[in-house]
Structures are given as structure tokens and as C-alpha cells.
Image 1 (cartoon, each protein chain N blue to C red):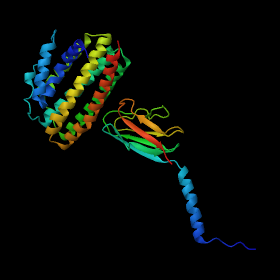
Image 2: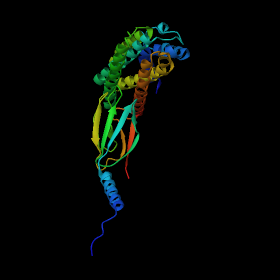
Image 3: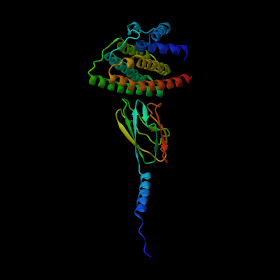
Image 4: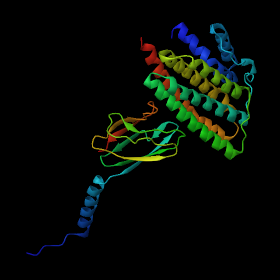
Length: 209
Length: 110
């Protein structure tokens, strides 16, 4: 990825992703924060990473529930935007898949927390996911054509990488309820599959002139 | 000359052989579980005319689609089931067209 594309990807993804990564690994979060500050020539009003849970902090089941819902809702909404603004058919199809899959996972998550009588508890990570997602979509909305396609897919690659890292490093290890933990374990392959799909499209887009 | 009746053991053997022949041609139902983006079993021996039953336990829709296009389950909704009859050229790899990293394989049963 050239520097300008990389800059775009980091700028777009940072608002929604940094805090989720921050849950699991302090060093990574600090590095990402540094990247964002450095490369954002026209900086978006990025949410303050300092609001993230401290590294190694435990998150409760109600907080995990809120994070799962926010993460899925955010990427589903980005998928809707990709269907509207994408030009490459694979990008549009991927957007539709994100809307469908993340919507489906959220239905399952909401059904589970309802059954468990767990009320999702908003927390800095879930709030930042929602706000960061809105900011990312706002920035993507200003792009068109191939620039949108690349910006969206770069964002999706980083988003799914970070979510995967958070699932492995923070959410699954901290989940106390067995059914919630099982849900996270079921969701993981979906996130991994989405990451692979996004990376494949990213390669194709990068190979285009 | 009068014909001598066959020994009961001979009749039993003949009947068993006939039953075996009939069983070889009878279509079989093969059930596949889709869980966590994996087809189970991943590889299954089948014959033309057999029925494939795909049960999707995931929260997202999938398909089971032959790589060469010989057969296609269509969309298998979350929590849903779809059946497909194996065509003459049905053996080979298949995948989910929604999630292309999901793979399975049908082999020709002997």
C-alpha cells in the first residue's frame, strides 16, 4: 500500500478501532495512536483513545455485550454505505455481506443477552466504536469511485484485524457466562472469514492501475 | 428326473446377495452440519441421486455450491436447512459463495 492509501486507511479506521484494540494490548494501542496523530494531515475529530479501558483491564459481561452489539452495528452500517457508494462489484457485494452477516450476529447476540437477562452496559469502548464508526462513514462519504472502494476495503481489513485481536485478547478471556463465551467463539470464524475476504479484495484493488 | 430343492442356507445366501444389490442403488441421505463456518463432514462419498441435507447452525446465511456449478443449495438461512440431489457429475469440491474460504468435497462412492 502506498503512503497516501495507508494514510487514508489509518485515518478512517482509527476512530472506530483504537479503543477495541486498547482493551487487549496497551503497546499496540499506543502505537496506533501515534500513527493516527502522525499521518492525519487533515485530521478527523478522532475520539480520544485515553477514554479506553486501561490495558489489561477486565470487561464485564454486560460491557462485552455492548461492545459486540456496537461492533456489529458499526460494520453493518458501513456495509450499507458500501452498497450505495461502491463502484467495484466485489466491494458492493462485500458491503452487502457485512450488512447481512453482522446483522445476523447481532440478532443472535441480542437474543442471547435477552435470554440471559443481561442488559448491555455502554462503556468507553462501545461508545467509541459507535462514534468512530460514524466518523469513518462520514469520511468515506466524501470519497467516490475507486478512492471510496479502496478506502472502504482498507478500513474493513484493519477493522476486522482489530476486532479479531480484541476477541482473542480481551472479549473471550474476560467473558464469564459460558453462553456468552460460546457466542464469541462462534463469532470469531465469521470475523476471520470477513478479514480474509477483505484482504483478497484489497489485493485485487491494489493490483489495478 | 425330479429337481432337488435347494438347501435353506443357499436360499438365505441368495436373498442376502439380492438385498445387497438393491442397497447399492438406493439413494442415500447425507447430512452436513454447518457450524462456525465449517462443513461437517468436510469430505463425503456420494452417488448420483443421493440427497445432501445441509443444516446451518450459524447466525449468518451460507450456501453449498459446487465449484463447477453442477449443483447449488441456494441460500441456506441462519438456522435453516436445504437439500440438494446429487446430479450425475456431482462429485468434486464445493464452497460457500458468500464466504469463499468455506470448502467441502464430495467424492464418488465406490
